[in-house]
Image (cartoon, rainbow, N blue to C red):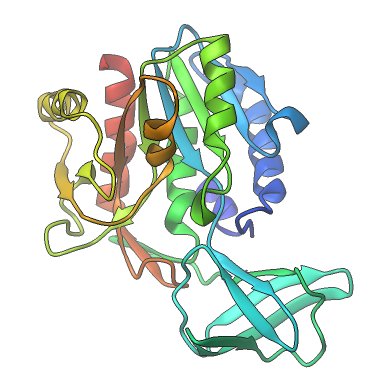
Length: 302
């Protein structure tokens, strides 16, 4: 759990992913010597803070977004949401401006959000939920599980993958925007026809803890049935626990894959969590293990 704990203790609100990106690059260079296949690594200003890893001869790309929800400081102690964080009065927030570190509490409700820091925080400063990580024999709970668990899953996949793209994207929680230029690069360098979205979904009346990874048949957007049927067939054959998700709302990097000018099939596959976009997101370790195993199986068999 050491790597996962390190990932979960890095602040990286949408639009400010450089810290998690730099950590991932160091980790990739350090660990890639032990992976089954050594990837080609693409990063830098051309890709903003995104990272692309090309393994062998890809047919499939896996996308995992690095950013989290949070808040931006406005004026007169006011906060504006980034993404869709739950507004819970008294939540502890952390961040940093050029005057120093910040730890404060959220005050107010969805109509008007404020902080109680004793000095003026420089406008534009990003704040995120203070991390309070808890792990027992059944659950992991804390902030940023969405989508640090998806990032962790993608890193674990890198250990065994022979052919494929593993891509760490940005901006997803607040409107997206990185997938179009990433797909342009992928389709020019080594084209793919299918994509998996390594992200975290919701616990609902039909998707529960301890019942396996969720394979999403639809959220607000609908992937092609021919592809999801193939995913479900392979998942059934694998023997790895999974459950099917059907929702009317929500979205992911899959939306931008579908809206791209490329004919790429996609499917969202991720562990379900409770307390979404709060400091107390909660995921079953059983479901996380199923997610990791499912991605490794699918990348070998798709």
